[in-house]
Length: 239
Image (cartoon, rainbow, N blue to C red):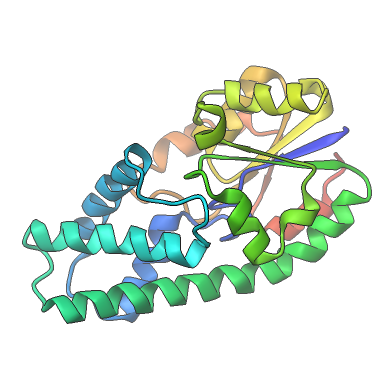
């Protein structure tokens, strides 16, 4: 194996926890008066809005992404009649949840950096992510930019997971064949199935996934070459 192709969101930044679960935990911590199903409805709608519209700027750090993301979510919750609070309270929720999540990511990434440094001694590392066009800025802010020889971002290349073509682009850009590649991610649909289609080795970081659809992941678990439950377990694998 020559190259490791990492997913970013939900893999490196949260150690396998789906971002809906990370955010919901912070909604609970802030005592936001909505239930989980109401939150999940607006989480999905907010993600679609952020992907379709130019809301995230290329210079946005991740805490600013969070402010915009949670801002859209809470406005949708309010518009749907789920969140009935004063505007000043809603804005307070946005700021506190965003700062909590940013702290959570920074704490997780302190574990990840030594892992990436060790893997970088043996493999080329490439990041392949569905993101908003500001991933380079996010990586610099978190001190991750030096670990990756290439970053392939959906907003930049015009292809989104689960389309396996985004991984093909990453492999072609780095002159590596699928059989020399390992794809590492938390999503069966977005990472492991594309790896299987391309004929690459895959490592599924199977942790706290999307709460509304876990049965299909379990049914397809045989597609993964390896299954781990903590990103640090990569060091235990004989790739």
